[in-house]
Structures are given as C-alpha cells and as structure tokens.
Image (cartoon, rainbow, N blue to C red; front, top):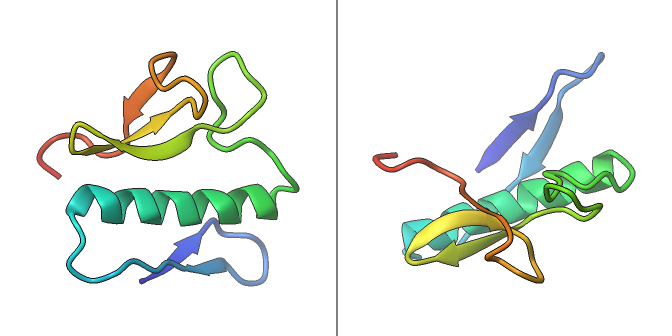
Length: 88
C-alpha cells in the first residue's frame, strides 16, 4: 500500500506500508498505524504523534478485544481510543 501524507511544497511525502496478507483486520490496522506513526515521528524530528494526553510520549497502536486502538504504552487503561470506528 502506498500512502501520501500531507502536501508539502514540491512533492508530497509517500510512505510504503507493509502487512502480511491474510492477517486479521485489527492486526493489519495496527501495523499500518504503527508504520505511519514511525514515519510521522521521524519526519517531525521526534514529535510525539499522536501524543498521549498529559504525557510527552506518543500513544501506541495495539489490538485490544479484537479491535485496533491507540493506548498509553505503559498503562493501556490510562488512555484508550479506537483507531477505526465500528462498521469500517
């Protein structure tokens, strides 16, 4: 999958995202979100994206109860949000 990120002057930033075929949907979403996040953090010089509310570190993509979420890496119960809403 090729994903175009932003619209910087000159040329857009293109990211290659990789996931194994046949993996559960939530795992593929987490892999995609993690790879895009790594690229965004690198492209911004280390900015925590997306930032954990109230902390200086980024949220992490994880599968919880069969769905893809962004969570606080050290304590997933502190903050959790679905990456994709139901039905998508």
